[in-house]
Each structure stands twice: as C-alpha cells, then as structure tokens.
Length: 304
Length: 259
Image (cartoon, rainbow over all chains, first blue to last red; front, side, top):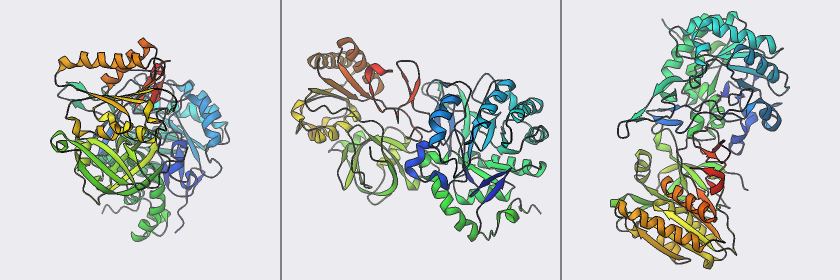
C-alpha cells in the first residue's frame, strides 16, 4: 500500500516522524539509518538565543517511562541554521523546526527567522513544555494565551504550515485545540509530556534537580490515545499523535483513533535505529491488520 | 573515526570475576563483537538486553574493557536494577549494543602515563594497557573495596607497573588521596588518566590542577541515549556551558570541565 501521507500541505513518505527533544538535531542519528527514509524530522526545540537548560540530574527512569527536565537546552536558532540544517536531508524529507519563546512577540520573531529558511518545511510551536519556569505551560493551559501565540506565529510564518503542540496538563484539551484551530493553526501535535515527579526515600531528595519533569514513554500512551481521539473528532485540521509509541502496532492505534501521522519520541532512546526499523516494519504490520489505505483507516475506531 | 553501529548480538560468556566476584557483584560479560574494528580505549557502548521490552526503558552505558575481533568484554558491577538484570543474563541471550561511542583517552607512546582507577573504573585501562605501544611507560594506581581478584587487575600487571590500595574504612580515604597525589607528583611532566566514581575523579582533578599535571578524566553519568540526543548526561565545562558526557566525553581534560 502507499505509505505516504499529506499533512497540511506537507508530503510525508510515511506517517512516522521523530519527536522534538528525542532526536537531537537529527544528525546524531545518521550512523544508524537513512534520515531521508523518515516521514519527517522534528528537531530539538529552538529558541532565539542558545540556552544552557536545567541543572543535573535532568532525567529519571520510571516504570515503563522516564521523566525529563532538560529545560530546553539548545544551540539557538542561528547556530541551528548555520551548522545543523545544511547537513540535514531537507530536500528529501520534511524538517520541522520546533520553537519555543517566552512571549508572543518573541515567538513571532523566531517563527519569521525559521520560516524564511528553505530547508525548514514547517514549524511546530511548543506551547506546552512544562519544564521552563518562565512560561511554556501557561500558554498551553489557557485557550486565549494559546491562541495569541498561534496568531503571532501565523503572522510571521509566510506559507509554511504551523503545527501547534498541545500539553495534556489541562482540564480540557479540546478547548485548547479549538482555540488554536480558530487562531489559524494548520495542524496539531499531541501530546507533550505529562508533568510528574520521582523521589528517592533514601536520600529524601527529588530525582530531578528541577523537582518536577515531563513524563514520557509507554506509560503515557493511554493518555495520549485518549487525547488524540477527543481532539481529532473535535477539530477540522489534521492531528499528529504521539505519546509512548513503541511499535508499528502503536502507530496503527494512533491512526485508528484519528491521527494523520505520528511522532516517535522516547523509544528513540531504547535503540538509536528505532525509528528507521519502525518505518521498515510498518507496511507489513499495516497489511497484516487489513489496512489498505491510510485515508479509510484513519479514525475508523468503532465505538459502537 | 569509524561510524558507530547498533546491532543485536549474543552473550558469548558471562561469569563472576574471580572466586569472590559473585558475592561482590562483579561480573565479566563477553558479547559477540558486531564488527567494531577500531575501538579506542576509553570509549564506551550502550547495552540493552532485547528481553527488557519497556522495562527498564534505558540501555546502560559501559566502558569497553577489552575488544578483540571476536568479542567485546565489559566489567559490570551489580549496583542497581539495570546492572543486576544485566548480570543475570545467560550465555546465548541477545543484547542490543551500540557504539563504540565517545572520546577515548590519549595514547602518548613516549610519555610516562599514570592510570588512576577507582573500583569498576579499572575497566578501560585493561584495553588501554593492551593497546598501548610502550606499556613500560604505564603505571597503574588502583583503589578498590572488594578483593583484588574481583577485578581484571592482573590483566594490567602483566603489562604495566601497578599498585593497589584497598579501602576498608572511611579512615582509609585520606591515605588513598595521599597516594594519588604522590603518584601524580611523580608524573609531573607526564600524563594522568582517571576513571572511577565522581568523588574519586574530583580528588584526581584537584590534585592535577594543584600539581600542574596534564590529566584526563572519564566521567560517569546516567545516560538515556548515549549519542548526544537526550541531553540527560551533561557536564559543565570550564566556561559554564552544558556539554554531553556521551559525545563530548566521556573523557575530558581535567581543566576543561568542573565536577
């Protein structure tokens, strides 16, 4: 079957993208597979200026998952554009730039810089990273704030599609999704990590220096499926599902509940060739489940 | 540098190290070499048994203790959940392994070189001594708690001058620190290399800076990916920047990082 997917004007070879924060700038994975074989690559969240991120420890292993509080460490947009992007196969597969800022104006400025680059296919707006104390989560938790950021990015992004990444740490994710859609988002990606914590009784200290962090991995998959199911039914723009995807069957589950495409995140840490293997396995697993085309399979969940 | 690879390989042999290795949790695990031809001493690999599924989630990083065309050997101390599970592997089990990763120790054939090892941190010096063109220039100072037979100490003494210091109580620590400083002072114009627990590395670093000895440290940090992507293993360099221990290290010049 044809694996390709059309997503808000982007043509993906297959529905498997890699999730921001779990795939570096892409280049780290070149020894382990062909980057051009991926449906898309979402790079590590970028800010206008380089960021050092949070103090150590920043990661903790938890049951079927992990917590992270990296604090958006990144090389800054300038270095990404000069050193990283030219070495990525942007002509062969869409490179999505994930962006983060502290206020709507800065979001707009950053979006303008990134959208002007030929090698950037689309923007993914991080309004939901729970780790940075000065903002992030606030935009993602308030429909009007989320809409403001979306508008600011849309104003500056030219013809490039804008994907807004939603936080699950809200009472009503559908409300946020609708607000972002109304503000002009071209598609949505969800879910970002769930806020959590882990502690050590022996030392009586938190396992992360930041105390709280974002939970990801197979442990969050049921929450992610629920969110993708609710949101994809409520909006008219495509939804990219993510949260704990660890197999080709998981990819099918997300598409079944309504996702156009998926992002693979934490599983990239379990082996660096994970995403490449998943892309290879997907056609066979889809065929074995009787999927003949993505269009008819998408959102075909029978809820009785 | 040859490209790292990720492959599933078999456990060829797994055994406690020496007669007392079992009771002290020190094991030697030998895997099929997946074709790595140029392992440099001080590099590491990520190991994750395929049977783990989602639990535990992360692979574990280990310094490469010995590399031959047929096999890779790792010295593993069972200290936590991951290492306990790894030491429970059986011959024939499958392990996903990726590497060789990171920067190696400097090999400077004509320079008197001091190898400082703390406990399981002796591992890279086995390969280092074996690969060194002039092992007569090497000296090992090894600090340990479990008996010496639990470690591949003799693999090194066959090639290089060596002495060991067994720490049996906290009162022994200042004595060991004095031995480190003495050995480093003796290598003032040479090179010092260290691998071991962070407090030990801190001691070595302080001595190196005080005595002006060129010194490299192999850092140990929790890692999720081992390839520079997760940013979970960062160290702080001398300019205050966060740098990945996996790709910028694990071997750093002592004056280029803070501990």
